[in-house]
Image (cartoon, rainbow, N blue to C red; front, top):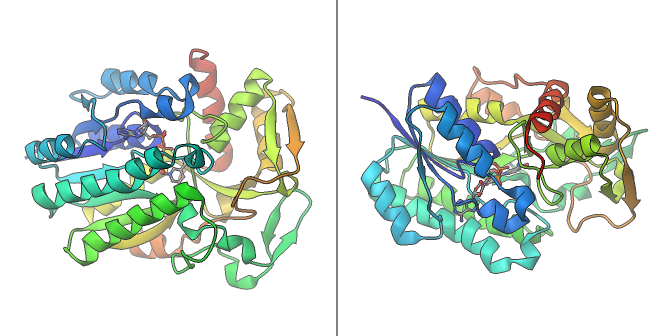
Length: 353
Ligand SMILES: NC(=O)c1ccc[n+]([C@@H]2O[C@H](COP(=O)([O-])OP(=O)(O)OC[C@H]3O[C@@H](n4cnc5c(N)ncnc54)[C@H](O)[C@@H]3O)[C@@H](O)[C@H]2O)c1
């Protein structure tokens, strides 16, 4: 019998990659929920309709549902009618900085929307893996307390305990999260609880920077995608604090989708994984400028603002040892450099907004 996948946020970076991967490579029948809320959060630059249309063209049998995850009755009815074999929940208000201006939209989407999905799953398909895209912002700014060393173009951990990065046992409370980090942490706890309390095979993936050619990058979300877009258009990129040496680890959306496929095949209950590019795919903003320039031949135009973004990580890269130990067949396949090359190509192909 054909397996069915339900993806929320299907027109977004992760959702669309997951739809294509499960549909084409694994033969799932794929249903996506998205209402282009990204355009409401970020304006026309965040519009994801182009990606929804791409899915319609490229994925045979793809079924789009124009639904808001805040619509509790609508979500329950759809999940009951589909009884999917697996759920990937990737719809969100995804911006750390945007959340303070829209606190109710942020919480209703991230925390309550996740509850709607969890309850619908419990009612309709409690045996199906439920995979939630959480975030490394659940750790708040606590990683900034780790002793750092300043190198020529980046910060790095001075404490050898973090030589492999931040692990899943890192504290999630008593630090500054941003409203986004707190609403995602609420959802993350609930997803774990539906695993432990009800026995549903859930996982929380605490993402570093998730990236790839199909991101609709905007200043407030989608670091590499937006940086490359600025480079190509000669648009000014604003660096906020930390001398531009702040470090993020970047993972290609394909490697996220490949992980989700592994989890769906061998699910566990109430698990938490840090999912990022790890140290090998980490970059500072200054280093990312150089990488983009190496593909485009254009000098990055940028200004430096002394004030860092509230609660922004100075140095963050994921410790991938737990995820690799639990899923030895999975690993990073897309290097940072290749990923930037793909993002450059994608912006060149896309119509200007
Ligand atoms: N991209 C990153 O760097 C990153 C990092 C850590 C965690 N995450 C998490 O991964 C997930 C996917 O991120 P992304 O980068 O693909 O984001 P994205 O904005 O590209 O995709 C999210 C999609 O969800 C849709 N959406 C938002 N609110 C909705 C609602 N109420 N109802 C229906 N659809 C709605 C949007 O229109 C958008 O198409 C999110 O949960 C995000 O918090 C992303």
